[in-house]
Image (tube, rainbow over all chains, first blue to last red; front, top):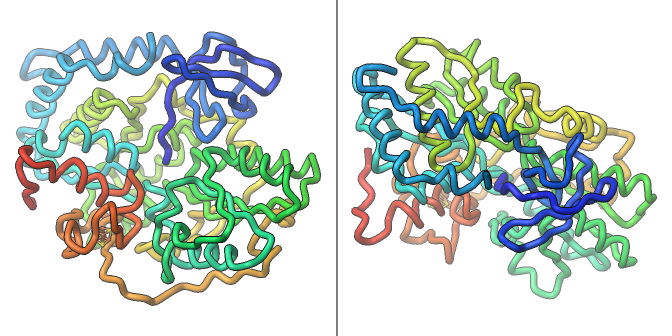
Length: 74
Length: 369
Ligand code: SF4
């Protein structure tokens, strides 16, 4: 039930926003997040954005997947 | 960057599996628990359990809100549907969960609205003169949204809206598991979206007092594998800390705004979990200022613990004591089409996930460890 997917904020008006994923748009509330801007990716759960995704951290994690050290190393 | 497909890359998958087996060799037998039902789904879908090194087992934990909601709650909800002028609003997952006298789906003729958000429940209340009762279940992920809706209802003075609250908190349940001597858990994959709200800190007691490594993980398969790598590294280095793999979403302090809203509306109290009994400080209850929205008070409901024995072993499964196929009912008298217990009802329940992913023909039969 804690399933929540990353969706892109495409419209914002006060505490209300519209997010989009694969062409599907949905109205959400922005009461739980600070400083979000159109273009941000948000984690949406039960009609609310619960967190904003951090691009820098996202890239870091992807890089970690790639950095696979040789056997014997950690 | 779409924050989705990048974390499903199959090439990287293989190298992470390689890394896991290299790290696992030399380590003792380890039972790691994925606390969250959404992780159980990711793991099932990827067939991860069958690909792990022999000494590493993954156990499904109590992180499925529907699965841990006790009979007494469902019985109270069902009782409400027997009254006139009431409309129940609930997340779809709750419809099939058996109480001691059947489930909500069987309540034909009563008014039950399946909603995706508590906002919809409030919207229904705005448009009807009936009493609308929202079944507020869910963990820390869901509670702030519900809190926000309560505040809106209070602001707009909506009088025909109330909640039957059974929100629960994850870290106290994890600590409770570790106090049970029968339970053997060496480390935890902690839920990503619960942690988006609460941050890393509430798990520190698990790492510091109980010396169990914790890694907060995202929900794509590469996230889960990397979390496993991080856990195994902690075992290799003989340390226990709380680490965040899902750093693109989870901040160490969590989401302050959401936490404030939650604390504004709810207070913490002891709560009953299915199969685990009453766990101290593991539930959320409406504060006095908002008690007018409490359905228990408004309709003088009583939550009575039922003693009915159904043979369902969800409780033992939620504690990681047995795996779903160890339940004699599994796949026999209990299937997703005719569930006996909540772990088979919810798509995220351990039994449903095992039934769907671990028993597929051609993928090899499930083998008990
Ligand atoms: S298989 Fe069915 S009866 Fe057995 S524990 Fe799971 S939900 Fe309960």
